[in-house]
Image (cartoon, rainbow, N blue to C red; front, top):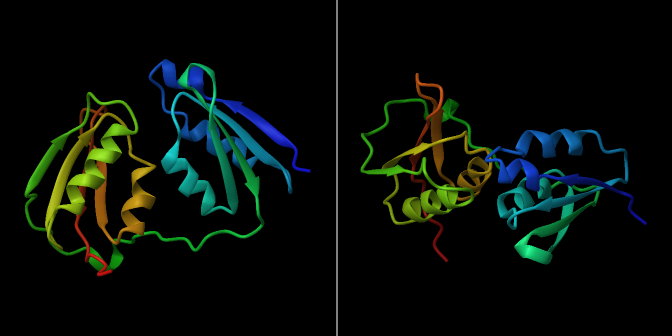
Length: 172
């Protein structure tokens, strides 16, 4: 039977904070065989993939008030990591053909909008997006879909700008 460490990020989310560091610190502190019981204000879909790549399976359920409880149970087997590297793609990028300003949106809406927009673009085209925080959950999703990105905080320190280059689409 798995012993679960409880992490409640609802107060952080309601205050407008980013709980990713808090969650990953808890995951890093887990003893062998321990799992994580997470409480959040929404279903943390991107986190499911991030922790899946670290060897956890999940069981999510909606609880009272529209909040979510997610159990992350260790399997001992990590999924194959898919991280895009810019070392083989560090040449000049074309100018963006699409621009999104997602600074006024709450997670996970910025990620959803970016992924939807990139999926409509031709390979090699670039999307520019402005966000109010670093999109840590977006990066594994872009890599999984074969896209590359560059990003960083603007000089104002409050705006994160990401450029996403559409990759090849898989033919089904």
